[in-house]
Amino acid sequence: MSKAFLAGRQPLWALRDVSLEVAPGSFTCIVGPSGCGKSTLLRILGGLDTPSSGRVVMPEANGRIPASAFVFQEHGVFEWLNVFDNITFGCRMAGMRWAEYTVRAREWIQRTGLRGFERAYPHQLSGGMRQRVALARAFALDAPALLMDEPLGALDAQTRLLMQEQLVDLWEAERKTVVLVTHSIEEALLLGDRVILMSARPGRIKDELTVPFPRPRRLALERTPEFGALRHRIWAALREEAEMSALAR
Ligand code: ADP
Ligand code: MG
Image (tube, rainbow, N blue to C red; front, side, top):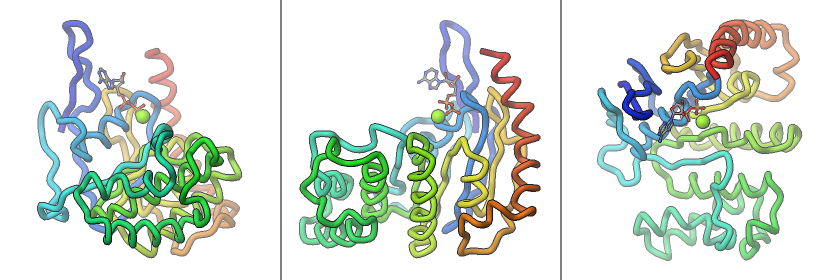
């Protein structure tokens, strides 16, 4: 598919001939320079935007509404709702009954370590806890696909490492289809089955690689030479694109 936005009278091609197949239950990470169309791609996958040409097919969704749940980098929690109401928001919007969404919320509050904070408001929570609320909401919805746009990008380094482990644990237990956009090559290698590299605008798929590391993965993996070699390979490929996109600014 391709996607153009109008910039004055000119079309601005955000995505050009992107073709991507994602296996059900797999974890795909997308990395690419800023402005290459990663968020646009994710929004189109989630039905929040439409492609200019081409289409998205989700046989796995099989008519289920919603077919996907989003986790954004920031502003993903509603400040005026407490933790419980935030987590159940998607379920309530999807028309789920009280009896069901309460059970789901309890489960996900437990699994994301938010017990005791059900009645707290987002401003009373740390950045990591706020993102756990966003994750709990997405998982509670039980959509076949989770679309995450730099979900850990705004966290401090240590919180981010802990959250990476938590996210991977949750995913290993649930095996949702995940497409996650990240700036971090390390994060992509730690979380993903596959890493998709996008080129500078117009975004295309420049390369993709299968992550060879067995699961469960732990942070210690980052210290192995194999990890270092892959990180270097991705960085070399991305560097060119990052420089091009910096020049275009
Ligand atoms: P990324 O997430 O990789 O940083 P985006 O998908 O946000 O990139 O944006 C890709 C390109 O499309 C950018 O040049 C951006 O300015 C442009 N763009 C994104 N959304 C819109 C929009 N709604 N209207 C016009 N241009 C947009
Ligand atoms: Mg983005």
